[in-house]
Length: 227
Figure 1 (tube, rainbow, N blue to C red):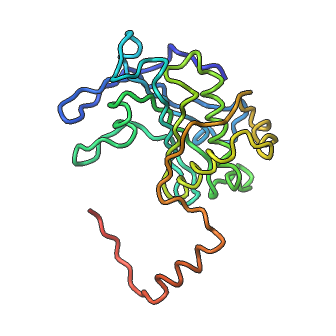
Figure 2: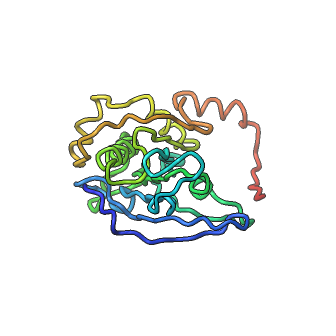
Figure 3: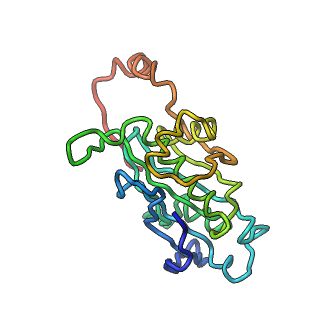
């Protein structure tokens, strides 16, 4: 579980005429005993300025916060995000964070539809939150070797990912998760985070179906609109 600083690619993306250059450490398996290495991996990105003694704004290699966006949606499995531009040239959240001097650790996580070789479901609850906790522990365990401040991890997610982000913040070091983390071979460290960014978190599952029925029960047609 030790981070290898020498295994990276240097990449550059143009954001509004500004070159954003960063080191990309991708497909890091963050547990010793992974169940599914398609999802139990993390992409780690840091501005190249931090490896040259430079600063971005008030941040440097040791003080930069770590943006931690998960890709969970609908409690489905999610692979790690990567920096990218959309069709209009607008940066995604990972690239926007790098431009502003944040370090980014984008974790993947298992989800409810995954099955193992024997057809047994391998990603149902609490797999997603356990994976995210293990990724946080990896960052804390390797803090001295990695750019950014692992005491300032900012979790981010939308919908079910927002719920995971909120739960990650609310359940720091909760003993109920220890057996699951131990089985995965998670790093021996804390999974406490600094802050939570949760967009439209899906948290009230007991009443969600009734709420949708009340709101949309009379609707018989649906059309997806792309903007």
